[in-house]
Amino acid sequence: MAPETNRALSRDREWSEWMAAAQRGDRAAYERLLREILPFLRALAAGRHRAPDRIEDVVQDVLLTVHRVRHTYDPARPFSHWLAAIARRRSIDALRRRGRTEAAEVSDAQAYETFADPRAKQEMEARDRAAGLGPAIASLPPGQREALEMLKLRELSLAEASRASGKSVASLKVSVHRAIRALRAQLTGGGR
Amino acid sequence: MSETTERLIERLAAEAEPVRRLPAPAVLATLWLLAVGAVAAIAILGFSDLDVFARRAHDLQLLLDMMATLTTGVAAVVAAFQLSLPDRAPAWALLPLPPLAAWIATSGYGCYRHWIAFGPDGWELGESTHCFRFILAVSAPLGVSLLLMLQRARPLAPVRVAIVGGLGVAAIAACLLQFFHPFDVTLLDLSVHVVAIAIVIAAASLWGRWSGRREARS
Image 1 (cartoon, rainbow over the protein chains, first blue to last red):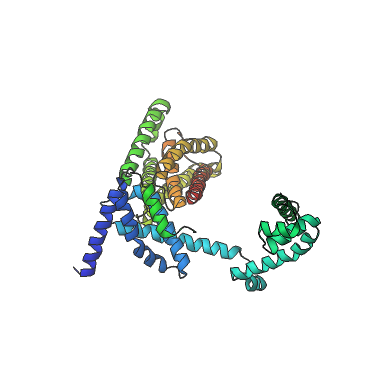
Image 2: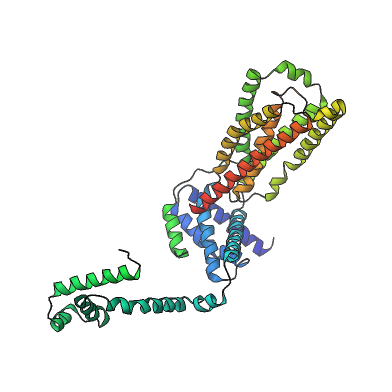
């Protein structure tokens, strides 16, 4: 028998014993098994998926499934076959999910340009929010606006703001709190 | 997934309680079939007209038809239990196909013979509504008990398992029908049988779809 076949057989026997122990509630054997099968699972997933994060998603899905159906494993049968069947199934499920998601998506060149990079999306959204923030701050009562500018925009400490405005620390806290609540209500269309 | 694989393994290992290993699929199938056989025997002895059945039992076509339905039912139930496990070949789904073909052939021959004997009257609606209700009424409890048993394996392809199981249940119901249906089937009766069996399989498939979604959420 070829050395690789021997190695695969002895590895399978070992995995099978660990799984049998895991079925009896041996957590250490189970953890060892789950760690040992990771390269095998990653190699199987890489056969159908290219992106590393997608491969890792499939691997995690397989681990969850193994956990859920571990009572169906019969130690008299090869463990690798059982595991590979689960991995194959989950890989195909992931491909189908991806196909469905892509079918439901609308191709929009501008959206792609703007949002392909999450940082760009955040930047755009921040700019949108900032556009409405100026008028909202301007509409606040003078006391609240002053407290907000000193504490949140110029980032003065409460003591510094108190000295600069001549107001007590407690009064500044109340003004900032009210200002933020008013801004939130304006920007979210009257929310809490 | 936001959780890292490393963290996931730690969590799964920490949650790993002892589990009761599922008995072999052949054992589960045998247990289920024996239980159904016992209930069916009581029902046949208690409620069917065995004298009428004994007179009809001389008909080779009827015997072949019953043998084909029963074999389809048993094969489909065995296949469903096998398919419910992750490492069994999908080819198990083909097991009930040969007896199913024999069933279709014997039923078709029965209709043809009826047509030759009765001519256009062979199209009349025989005991169709009774058959329809019988197949559905018998399939419902059998189907629920079978699907619940199959569910214990938390199948990876629940729709396929449920469809094959549904075929098994409908075939067994169709076989039992012969004890309570002392008439030759007309073509229309056969169509009604097919519709009833299709409803059972469709209901089983819906169950499979639902259980698959529930499994995916868990």
